[in-house]
Amino acid sequence: MDLNQLSDSQKAILKQFRETIKDCQLPNSEDAYLARWLIARDFDIPKAEKMLRNSLEWRRQHKIDTIRDDLKPSEVLTNYVSASLVGRDKTQSPLWITRYGRMDMKGVLRSAKKRDFIMYVVYLVETSIWRVISDPQKYKRSPDTMVQTTVIFDLEGLSMQHITNKQAVDAAIKIIQIYEANYPEYLSRVFVINAPKVFSIAYPILKPFIHERTRDKIKIFGHDSKQWKAAILAEVDPEELPAAYGGSMTDPDGNPNCITIVNMGGEVPKSYYFSCKPDTANKKTLSVSSGSKEHLEFQVDKAGSVLKWNFHCEDGDIVFAVYRKQGSALIPIVPADRVDCQMSPEEGELDCDETGVYVVEFDNGFSYLRSKKIWYAISVESAATSRD
Image (cartoon, rainbow, N blue to C red):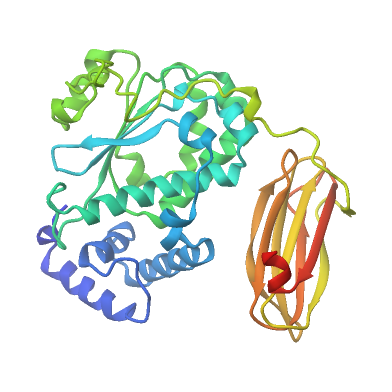
């Protein structure tokens, strides 16, 4: 979309919006970036401002601005998560292919934490945005061009295993929520192809989390390849599309799936699986009743000390957070996050820039039926000791 398509009143609102959020540290200062938030909220400045500020806080908390350099994906994620930028559509915007139906989500989520999988998807999105911004000639963009993405979402191979796996469904919902809240108007079109009958069970689960504006961009096709190939080729030139999807691209050996660009997913070898019994040596235990939370306090006497944690939950997941006491208030330091740590321990550390009491929280408030047993090892160490 070109910003020249905006009406005079919309351009005036965009100018006003820029003034409203002038105190924000933006990842992109172009008008096209700001316009996304206004379009997503029908040019309602207060709503767009709230959405943008919430997103900037999310980026800060999760260090999104440096994720391309900081995140080191595991072999399971790079080799068995089938999603990649393959070319451009006719508007010279990025074209992605995701072979979700071919992915062994049960295996992926037994070999990588759900949060790591979700952040890997964010990493892919951020990498795509960076590639477009860093190569304006290839993607034919200017500061007034709002680049969007076309996605081919291939469900060939989708089965009840994908739909009944709670971890996979939870991850899909979380990814949708993150995308809707933080990447407005980045989608141009989604072609869902090879949708089997079981997709009629899956889509209603996900649909409530997809904004109506996004739903309008989704086209769903069954296994009639003539139908979906024609629809895709109406928006993508053949030379930008793998032959398996109606284009002319192949691998050097002639493979029409272009697996050197986007892998085929496949079954994850069990050798990658987490151990079913995390180590309990040198760990204390804590019981968190259903519907409740527990706090552990740690005194930090020297600024620059490191708060380190290693914990796992015997059955299911737990919400974890770290706060710093300020009078009677708890100041969030590590934002609350629901952690799946029953198969692999959650490890992390925090540089404590200020002295005082730090509070580690285990929250089971979302569970009204089961208590949770936590095995944990938490300590405060000097920076020098932590480095050793």
